[in-house]
Structure formats: structure tokens, C-alpha cells
Image (cartoon, rainbow, N blue to C red):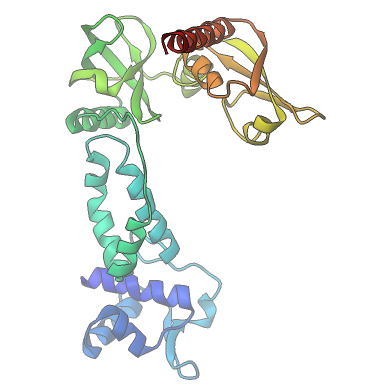
Length: 329
């Protein structure tokens, strides 16, 4: 353990436990008494840590004038529960499908966290007991993810070779990145497209190549991005929205009424236990699929667009397939 890690560990132990004996510090840090004394002197004399020895407690604690106040060493500071939370967050970040780029850049911080905790067995148990299952994940090449992240923060314009899946054709685009989105195991970029002169949403895994143009990005107000890209349900963007009103059975309502399908949704719990939910959408496809997950427990009360039409069509097709299989059997 480095000296920096040791001094952070000493203050963390005192902060979390109130007071810590000299022997406990020796056991936790696994250093000689002389080294520990030098670390304590360094904390007090060089870093200004308000640490004092209390004979009645036979341990080190913060001085009376600092109790109840927050003294922080230079640099990053976390309590032990916060450090364990960071490790769990790292597990989540490692599952985001960006070719490990996020975890790789966080590795120096993670190494420092491991040193500060000092209990390898606890860390290993934590990491074994946190499991993230990701299905249909679309990985993004690390060089693309890093370039877009840098351009987003430094406000740089990018040139993309982008594959439009619907047409199966790659096109050249100059874009000004505005926002990164991670949705259902896929990364997306909201950007101002200079060839179309409007905001568009790009799937990062469909970007075949990306380069920095050397020019500054066009800044679009965040409120405008949110207004144009977040109006509809799910990942489909659009500032023009339709509304569908759903009615869930009492059985389904027990769960659905606690769910957020869209930030602007309107829900109402009826006296008989049914739950009415109104949802805005721009494209009906994704919403229709999610409604079908509740087949038999939901009905469509009203719809200003085509989501009801898609739900009816897919339900009819499903019944026809089942009938055909039954006849064939």
C-alpha cells in the first residue's frame, strides 16, 4: 500500500469508527510501528488532519473542535460505504457494452479504492455477489466511444460514416454531438446533423468510422434537445406526439402503477382497482411491443395515432399462427 493510500485509509478508519487504536491501525495497514507514526505525523503536520490521541479511549480520534464537522484530505474522498457503492457502479459500467472503455479509464481509481479498503476478501465477495445480465447488447468500438465522448465534452464537430439499417446504406455525415444516451443495452448519440439541418439520433454501433473535423460544434440549447428528442415513448425521437390511453386490470395495476413509461405520462387509479395510463409517443412500434407484453391484462381506451392498429394486427397474426399450428398438429 502506498503512503497516499495509507493516510487516506487512516482517516477513513477514524471517521467511520470514531476512534481507532494504534494496534488496530497496524493490523489494518500491515506496516511497522515506525511507519505508522510517520504517517500519523504527516497527516497532522503536513495535511492538517485534526487527529489526536485520547488516553481514555486508548485510540486516535478527531479533536473536539472538529467533531461533527467534515474535514477532507486533498483529492478524492469517500467513506467506506461509498467506496463499496463505487465498486458496484463499476460492475454496472462494465456492462454498458462500450468495449470496456469506461472501466479501463476508471481502473486507476478502482485500484486506489481497493488499496483504501484493504480487505481483498470483502471486495471479491462483493464483486461475486453483484451480477448484471445483459441481453442483445450492441458493443461499440472503444475508439469510436472515446472520440465521441471527447467531442461531446470539448464541443467538437465530427465526421461520421453511418450505416442506416433500414436502407442498408452507409452515408457521410457532419454532426455536432449534443447528448449521449444509453437505452436498453444500446448507446445512442443525439446530434445536430449539418447535412439535414436538424437534430437526429444515431446508434453508436452503426457508426462505421468517426473523425474530428477540427471545427467547433454547433451548440443546441438543452431544452430544445429535450423538447425535440424526448417527446415520444422510448428511443424513438420526435417533437410531434400522439397519445394512447391504456386501461390495466387490477392484477396488472398492482405493478404498472409504480412504473414510469414516460416522464409526461398521466395515470389514474380507479376505485375498482383498474389503472388508467395515458402515454405520449412519436413512433408506435416500440410502445406497441411493450403493450403486447401485458396481453390479456390491458385494453386500449383511446389512441390518436397508430399504436392500437399495430397491437390489433400483431395480436391477430399471433392467433392465426397458433390456429395454423393447431390445424397442422
